[in-house]
Amino acid sequence: MGSGQITFSKSHDVGLITLNRPEARNAFNASMMGDLAEALQACRSPDIRAVLITGSGEAFCAGADVREFASRLEEAGPEGISKHLRELAGRFHRDVILEIRRLEKPVVAGINGVAAGGGFSLMLSCDIRIAADNARFLMAYANIGATADGGSTYYLPRLVGASRAMELYLAAQPINAEAALSMGLVSQVFPAADFNRHALETAVRLAQGPTKAFGKVKAMMDRSWQSSLEDQLDLETAAIADIGLTGDFQEGITAFTGKRRPWFQGK
Image (tube, rainbow, N blue to C red; front, side, top):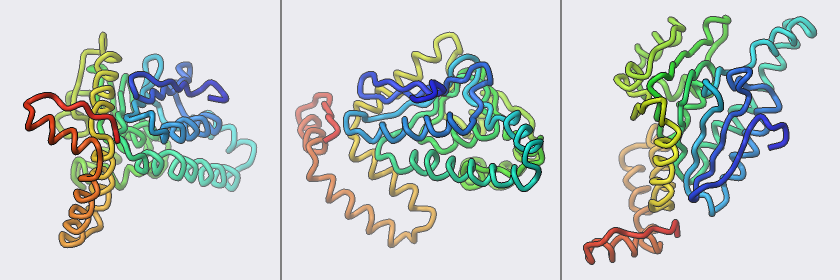
């Protein structure tokens, strides 16, 4: 990507997005946010059937670059930093969080190290979260007197319950990978030594699945929080009728009756 703070590549139908500011623990600044948005846009390509987001070095993402905040505050005062926060959060929400949810394919967060602040929120927005056994999770916002963003006030209570979510914000203390696993923040924990391999294997396995079905179920699950049961059942009826027209569904049925493994092509 343009600034080099995000690297993007494709492997085995997986879009590989790596946050690449290791000297700053992959903390977000404005240019990095733009690069991440550009990479996610590239993942709309039908040639990409799953996405893996991870970090370079020893961190997944330490959130926003607080040193940049300090500089803005010194230069522009409270009104200036307020404007900057509004702009940065707006871009984060519109171009990153919502774009992840709009992608009609699975997005995996490969949490290779600390996930704090906006990095914590970023991983919450992904469909599947897997972690290295040395990863740490920290909401962090309260430590600088900030409110939470990145959709964390939406996703976190739904994952861990309202009381635990509020506790994680108020305490602003790190938890380890095993604690994150036990409370449902992540679904799997792997040894750090070979975490990158496990993360890629997870994404590749998803990329070999029925992509259109995955995308429809992702969208329906997102809508389920606001839907009535009747509305959700109507969505499911329409979706499964549409999916009956796809090559992957027809392949799945043929493979099942032929007692062989299906070969899905995302079509």
